[in-house]
Amino acid sequence: MAVKVRPIPISAILGVLWGLLAARSAWADTVRLKGGGFIYDCQVVHEDNPMVSLRTPQGRMGVPRSMVLGISRGRSVFNSYDEQRARVSESDPEALYRLAEWCHKTAGLRSEMVELAEKVIALKEDHSGARRLLGHVRIDGKWRSPPPLLILLRVPTDKVLEEDLRSQLSYMLEPRKDVRLASGARKAVSKGTEGCEIVASALASKRGGVRFFGQELERPKVYSSVTLRAQADWLSGGSQTTVGSSGNLALEPGKNAAFVDALRQNASVIHNFLDGLIMRRVVAIEAASAPKPEPEAPPAAEEKSKDSKKK
Image (cartoon, rainbow, N blue to C red):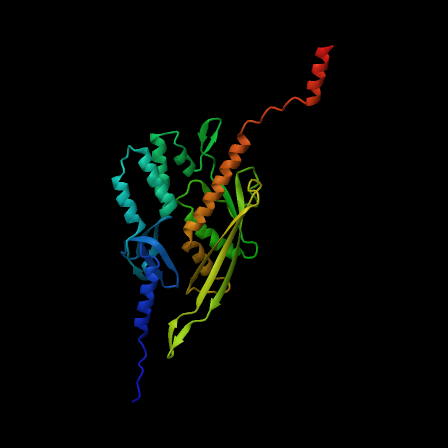
């Protein structure tokens, strides 16, 4: 007896795929965009038209409702933060510092970390841990807050990509007080430890989609990566990081959604990279400000002095 095979409804398949995708970030809400991108690890505050309001580790943001394809809800890191914050006394600097450390190392909540570290310093001015979280330096026994690290972003081969990456990095840096982007018109940041140049390069490849019984099960997928390489006189050997992403995003000349998505999906990696630059800059500033040891007397002069005494 012939068995009749019935094609699986594409809506059912997409529903399963969407459910599997949502599991990637089950600890937070995920917003799926109509253009093929995603906003991970956020908390949807409200969905009122015309904007969907989101709380993200980089701060608050709004997305036009017309751009949103779907929302997968889950318990977010913000729920954990709010619960811990409610249990911490406003007058306990060590408890506030521990929560600031959790925001920094585990949750990636930059704005909350800065707020908590500043509260710790208000209670305990000489708290070295909180000072270091904020990128402060100790010179002549006193804590000082250096100017923000100035970053000059360059993409030598593609000025359009440079502007797209600059726009995304600018958004990511909003909650930080220790780093800022230099104007695109600026040519160099060579004044001591004022800043550094970051040269970005991007690579992408495209894999064909999957079809079954004439129905599209999976759209063509783009794999993209962006490498950021920092260089400055005070950065001996330089420093670099590479972030990547994959998704159903357009890969066409002049359209850089896949590369911007690589940054967006790896915000914590980018911030850890910048934290490393800040700490190396702190070391460089403190080393340059350390008192120079007095030169020792030349051995020949000492011998001459001994000879004169014998005579």
